[in-house]
Length: 499
Image 1: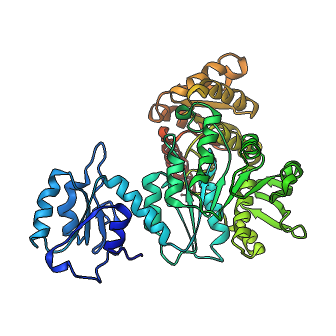
Image 2: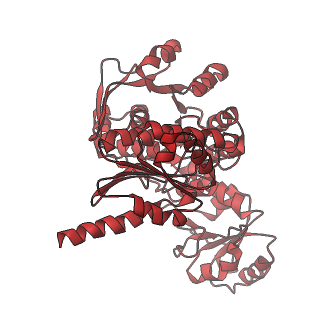
Image 3: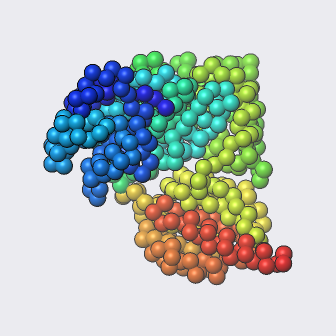
């Protein structure tokens, strides 16, 4: 863990240090880490008292002191703080210093940005509408056998999550792979300014957050703003199969050098001005996984064999981004390519589960039109002759696109030969209405429910031995509960059979 000096923290935040008289000339004083949660605070760390709509960290200052905090980062105008200032100045607290700031949220981000400048690692920032977490995980998987690597935990991809990630990074780390997402316009640029990426990746421009940004153009503007905080000698990697990203590149001529990943048919167009391109050839996707040859005009005499244990065309560009990062970092490319064989998905992302007599493709972590399409592709590869069940929850944050996307989902589900379709959430009422327009749709429709708990009895009634079940929804709908319920039913049945 890092060593945080009082002088650094004062400089990064523009705050004021208040100390007990006995510590005023202590030049060896430092804090071993920075925490915003007294439940995980370690002795000697600085505690930042964040304030939100439903909580106020200033109310836990006494607990922070009890746990051995070396510094309390507090808002100078908070009434509770006035007594702390008096007690510290009088030497009555028995330990921690105070750092007085205007806004602890802003201070926390400034601390992360300041510490980032002290880190010697290469920072890779992954953004885009879908595939961020899978790409982040793939990159880390490909480089970690050659360099000491870390990646964001879970979905720590907003201004507080990214700050958490940076502040917990080991000083010895050589590569930090972060994920950059947004809840509102302007956030990605702000995150980029905190992370100062050496390499930024934009996976694609899709419908995610259309509710807040309105149009695909606005989404494009938001995602590409990641370049504004990049280091001067940075690299930007783009999905060359995404027409909006290619158009933006041609129109804007970004000052940062750009590398592309793409399918073979787009290579000649993308490299017309000398741009480096990574592409795939000889793609094979089956039940056992995805394999292809990776190529690049940076190394025209070489090809790298990729064999992934997961099936789906969307994993191809993910792997190419990983290889491009490995190349940019000067790594052994054959070793990086071999590492792809160890890739595993994180969380409920196309996780294939064999639960007794049924198979479940749990892809309930999140949902967008793009990720729904890739989930259907995976079902086609994996389900073979099984009876197919779709449990579809609403895809949220689509704004004006909500109706069209959920009507399209009905057509896609019918085209993919689902035998039964169970719908959850207000958004999927559009899907239900579309299904009701045809005899085929009415035949496979098995119910529409507002919550997963309401739907559960019907799901358990519909799923039979030998079925292949796809779970797909925005996280809001908690479809992981369906996995648990199916597991309890079918694994328990298998156990009884074995007895």
